[in-house]
Length: 173
Image (cartoon, rainbow, N blue to C red; front, top):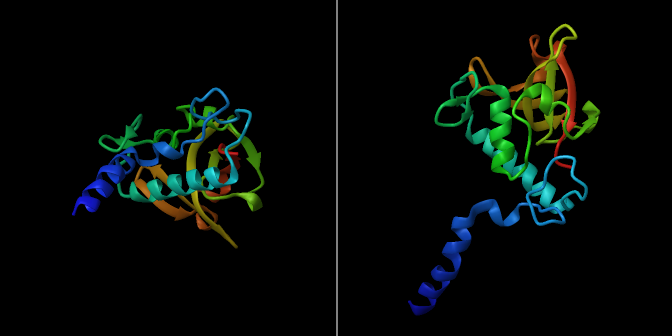
């Protein structure tokens, strides 16, 4: 019993710090910002991508709220992305048109879970963002905050979203 108590004494602080132990840091010791020099190592980036995807899936079913950026009130599209990335320790802009300028553009064929997909209507400004949770042949599965709430869908099979697909951006590498 004495060894079990010692084990719990050591383990509990680790459990309560959550993912904070794994946040990538820049050379000054701060939280990594998108586009900062010195990417996180491949393992750290993979961990962050998985964390973003898992958290996005956990939030499915929450309601839509214009201007919302936390689970207790609901989300709009960019508030949802902001919440996911901030939760993973990544600084990102609040508005989708500004988020679309961060990181680097990647071809659709190179899209990975955790990347962001941006949408434009009739060549106008970016008006929507979603986070990729799965890729494959003829599928680009995203989770995003829509008027229907936070949902998961294959945007390549959507008559609504697919024509407006503008670009994929990697904010993490």
